[in-house]
Image (cartoon, rainbow, N blue to C red; front, side):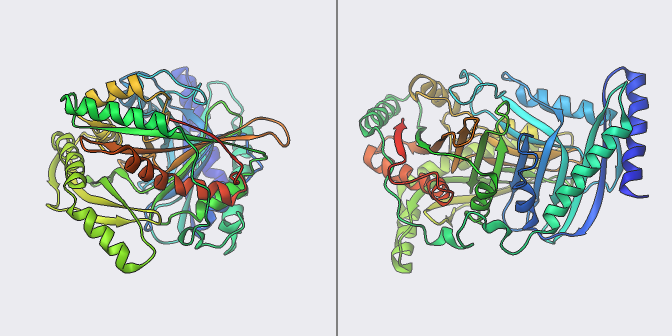
Length: 505
């Protein structure tokens, strides 16, 4: 049967079920598109025709699932300490009543919950994060998915059928938008991801940018307070973040933004989400190296402990020397071991097997290199990716250790709401697949309505503070971690030498 026939059939069955139940029912149809260039992901995400609709782009590295979603078929927002259980229960309720036709069990297709969780639900939302729920996820109305390294893509159409509604009108509208999205992806040229105006290797040879402005005195004070608390035995480590704010003339152009993100670090998971309630004028984006968890329907699980940092060097010999120093540093090794041990403890009740290497490796990124330990396991029956996300977040790599003591200190001292920074961002589907990443190396962009309106960008970076941390070293490390998003903003013309207005710590 054609896609049009399948959508109409699913809607008719869903509408009948909705009338019987007295509430909306989701109709979900998946179809294989054959080969579509993976670069079409970026071309589809950059479409401005529906700029006011919520959208999500999540592109994992190394040929893992990549998807772009447009519009909201079903909201899964929740708040409070039980936000993980609440959105999972809401998703399962929708899935239990939904009508699903077409291709089945392909990771990242069909009913897929996408979005992000706030870093700390116990902190009231701060400026720029108003209206963002503690768990702000949704099932996209239209979804393009590349589930693996091949160019085989899938299209999902999700439509809520009301007890009384025009199924024919809904189907026609959804199909028209879906084929527009597919045409954009299929029409992607080799330069489709280059609309930001620089070549695909720009991230390897970053332009020189001015160092971020900032309140170094305030940073020094906070690091001193953290070190004092650690030496008093209140906790072993706390991750202190800083936020650099940039005010630049608009407009904020979606194609350029997506093009710059496409050219950012290919070894990272790249993401872009619309901020809810901003009418297309707010974005959260980043290129993160830190996998929180990946689960697959067969029960396999992967996580990554990432902590301990060193800069890169221009020559191979100097770079290797920095990596050796990182591996030999007792401070860096202790910080990394806390993360590994915390991830292990969090996962053990949820898995039947767990493999953790004895020694870390080194993950090299364009601006910084990290100690990293890949962790694998097998999820227990009945457990889901949201159970793992809840157990892991926040790891000592972004919060501290022990977790609750470090979070209490951050609420009292850090001075700003992280929002989605360093929080889980990702997706899961109805088949048991899911990918979540830690939202670091990221930025929030807010554009006021109207032509030429200024764009306010907030860039985030954090450092792990331990007993022998020095403020100047941690400031230098956080400056390295700000570089990826600063480079991206420079590519799209939002960051110039006079553009950095102030930095808040």
